[in-house]
Image: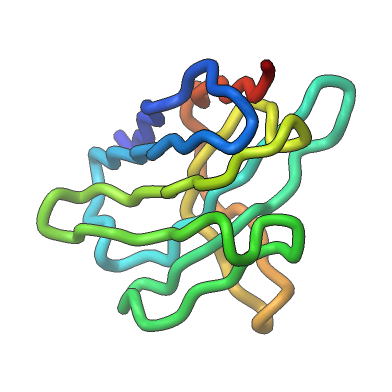
Length: 123
């Protein structure tokens, strides 16, 4: 059974940092591109970042460029999202999923969702 488990969220002040983890089970993470998505209250889920299966290519939505870093440890079957200089607008539930990449800036979730992890940025 393919499953993602996200963790690492929490409450942090503006300017703070969090590191999210995405643990995969039931399949080999190394075979897939992995993306992080977030859903803010009252808004649709949006793609934040992805990393190709080889780990050599990454993408970030403009709003997080220079602040977030996606990475993966295929040996641990886990992907990560390091989030620095967090802003209140980064608040939301963060999810990871396998993704299909159509072009560098066109990509879609292609598998099941985990339960997500809540990130709240507030003073």
